[in-house]
Image 1 (cartoon, one colour):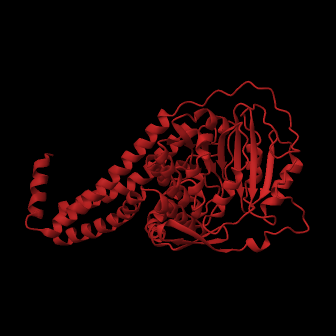
Image 2 (tube, one colour; image 1 turned 60 degrees about the vertical axis):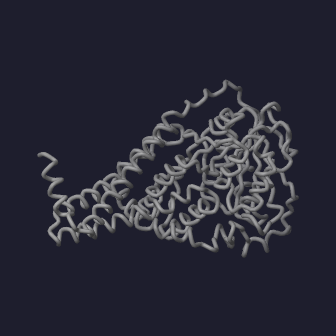
Image 3 (spheres, helix red, strand yellow; image 1 turned 180 degrees about the horizontal axis):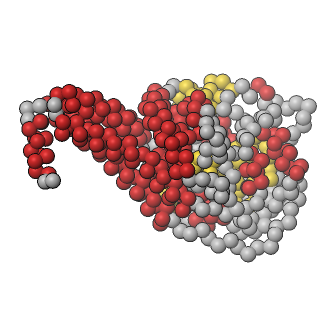
Length: 459
């Protein structure tokens, strides 16, 4: 059938019809959102395809367990050592697996520095139990957080403490979250990718729901879109992040973290001022298999978005784009109903087609994103990590909930003046100034009958 009669009929419906033109604009806007999402996912897929293959593992003999009498014992290779910093507050469910994975890296020379929030933190016994049951192949230093500043997050304070007293042999600093179980190549990939131009390399996260919990599937759906936006807009993720030694020695970085709410989203501003860049590596993607309830997930999303609002210029795109998609779906539905009741049937079909294209594209895009992530990070997915297509109906429900809740989370991030993060309440003041309002662990962060020196080394 020729398109000319259709166009003629549509022109007749729109002639002198201001509401009809508005409805057409809404449909075109929704189509534009759908195409934009397709382009972003295509871009993400292209980045993953262009990533270099993993460097071959070095043929090294098994490293003997090192005596850890001194917290900064000399590493295996003093010419190019690395330091992994792990900041802990609370007993994460996969912490012991994380510790085991860090101490099994195939990097020839590295040390692990663990900063625990307080002497009474639940992470202490987990770390000590790991110490008792395993022999580490790298030096390990464990210290409690020594100072609790009031104008940055305790995470940033812990990182700054972890950067202290670095010997000249340390050339790479790697940051890891307690819910990340890195593959053996993780640290070596970071070290071999950093260069004179690339002073930071980052991965990201992918969630594999371990159960039928609605929050877990909603998080999977939301994070798929967040992963694409973070990669395309150059937003690093501190859970799997590598830094060049020249970067961590820059006063501008330490000054930024000394007043920051988070370490990762504030990093691009520092790199731009230094004329350096951060590179995304699919091989550094971390798979998270934790369960989460919907009530716990939604505040977490708002906090993630808050960091973009505070520090990253991409917020000026993320915020309106995130609000536009669900708003256009609602408006297009209303416009289709009005058009049908007024006899503007071609316009009603266009509205319905725009809505259908948007809704049908969402699960397809998640499947595409997952395929790109699996291709780029084959070493982190396990055999029992089934593709989301195996549970397509749960994915669709998760997408529907994520699309419905996302505008609320965006608005909360935009208007948030206080934020709770792992038992600490922060004030978000104008100018991205951070202030600690309440820290329940601070009162207990004093030496007790458990004697831990201020620079305690677990051996």
